[in-house]
Image 1 (cartoon, rainbow, N blue to C red):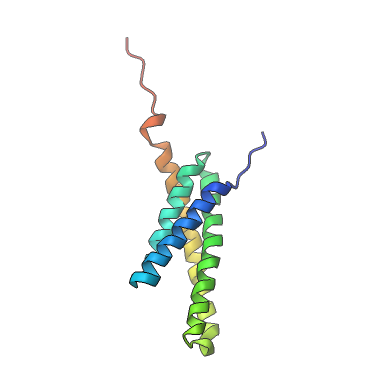
Image 2 (image 1 turned 90 degrees about the horizontal axis):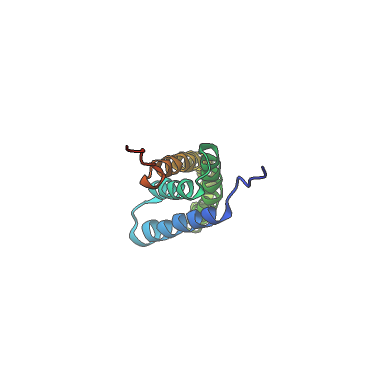
Amino acid sequence: MNMEIIKRNPLIIGIAIILSLYVIGDMLTGVSLLLPAFLLAGIVVGFMVNEDLKTGAINGAILGLISSVIINVILITMMYLQGYGNYIGSILLFNVIYLVIEIVICAFGGVLGFLIHSETLEDVEEPDSP
């Protein structure tokens, strides 16, 4: 059985969710919706994958890796342009820790998304009644 573990379409949709919530939340309103955006996108990806728990977790972790690299590059660039170039070492250390947290949150969201999809009413079979 040749199954593709990494699903591209859910990952693209998850990255779009994270980037759009980041632009709306952080850049326009000033309210940080970054960690809830990672959790929401992980749930969406896990829900869309619908194969097994491992595939949901792997796709969530890959989503977290790709999205957190993109978001952290944007954050580092913004901090550098605001004049924090002298503190780039501590900024990078903080962002590495933040990257790990975002990956874990997305993987957890992928597992949650799979579990939510497995508990939907579509999958429930009605018992045979005499």
